[in-house]
Length: 270
Image (spheres, rainbow, N blue to C red):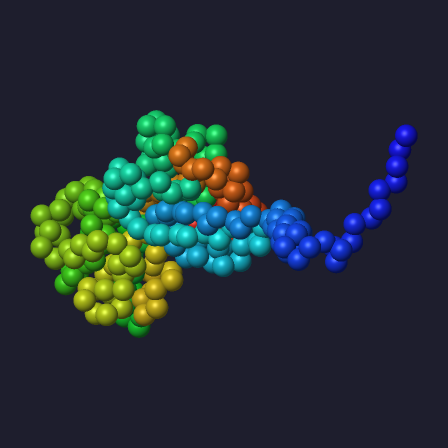
């Protein structure tokens, strides 16, 4: 036979039991509310070659709220390679295609996530207001370089454009003549030295000349001296945020992002 049990009202319980029941009820309500709060998104980390500084900075400032916050650090390709070799583990990297191919070969970067961002090339800059030198041909560029008091480039041991420029000096047969009057900078916007009057000419990736105030882009290197550098983006295998990292790559290679990148001195990657 079933007996109906009388309802037990909290106030009918002894004081100690009332306190225990009340505490338990509060804890249950607290845990239930926590279960409905989404976990806070973890920041992504991005290491990017300096040539992509301007467009990446703009794009991250405009990113959708659906993407986590991105902690980004810019540096020369050489500096980024060194950081990775020392065990740093970002989620996403942007590097010249040759460097990323190497990371894929070492199984550091994920080949499936690899995407091209665009190409830029070395250009020549002078101080704003200065007479534009002739760089239209190999011969004209050679003469302009030899006439310059000081030329600034990125350190060839650290930056892609520096290696290209040093190779060009050899190609033009002026490597010895340029050695003592070439200022080599570790990284950053190296043509700022031109704006400060420390050099007559600056040779750097065009995407790293355009953002600098106080200088004028004369143009790219002429003819067969033009050596475009393609920049790619990929997720690192060690990232523990694979889905968010892939979403970031998707955003950086979207149609809207491509327009920003091309306005920053890049052309579509071939």
